[in-house]
Length: 344
Image (cartoon, rainbow, N blue to C red; front, side, top):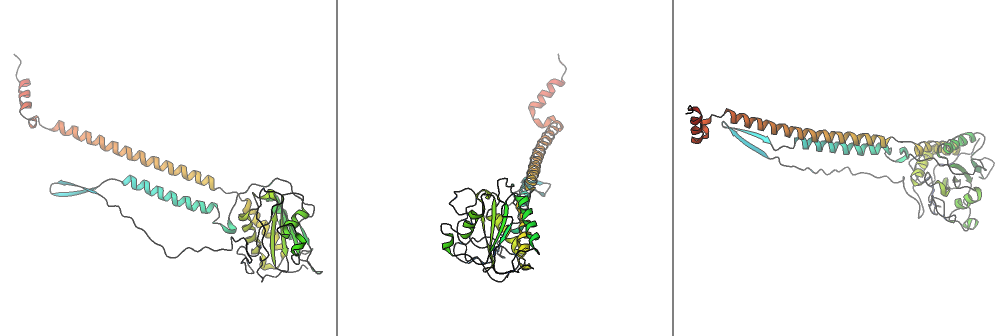
């Protein structure tokens, strides 16, 4: 039976080191600062990062204020007065089509914002990153884990080894990055990894000859874990994806099974990191739809104005044709008399 891990201590106090994950020189640090248990919102344990220079991200919660300030804007509508037979008729100064157009634009903006939130999964552990798979070299010579914890009872043994390996294999197959769990009882003194920013930096250099691995260091005495990744994995293993990994791993922490926490946690995280989103396609369709609506509204407005002008011209013509000639004055009378009299 495997050794159970505790879940009550808050770790992360031995963080530190750089966070350079993509590119950079071999002498640079490849580790993330801060501890894994201090991130995310999974079950078990306090998740506040201790120590200076720790990386804080998903542990912060942002609360929007419950007090909303409403700003109302009133645009007065001008009216035209037409007097006929003692009655007053009111006609709006137009803007009906403009109001419709403005409404469509406002609705489109709201829809874009909502779709944008859906495309990113509203952040956190549900976020879909749509990353491209890493196709570079990895070092699998050590398998998926090494357990150097003290005592005869190990965290990983035959009872739970398959769970860890299955999850790590699925993570590797999806992301192309090769995960590796290294378990120790206590963090060595600084003198044992002199020349490196962190112990996990030194450990990565010692274990792997490729830059496509993802090292997870679990320290039993701290009940916390730390990371180091190859320089070539920066497109996949960055701070955003690391937040997702921590959230998923911490979500299984309550089980007390290290193999399940990391195996199932990384498998779940890989799904979100590599998930393909249809956000762009939806946005394209919406943009085209809004553009078509705007064009239709503009054409309708032009057609309506044209019809009004044609009706006005027709009314003016009918008015002229129905008007008696006598109303045009003496000149018209003389002209009528001239043409009515027989020609000599």
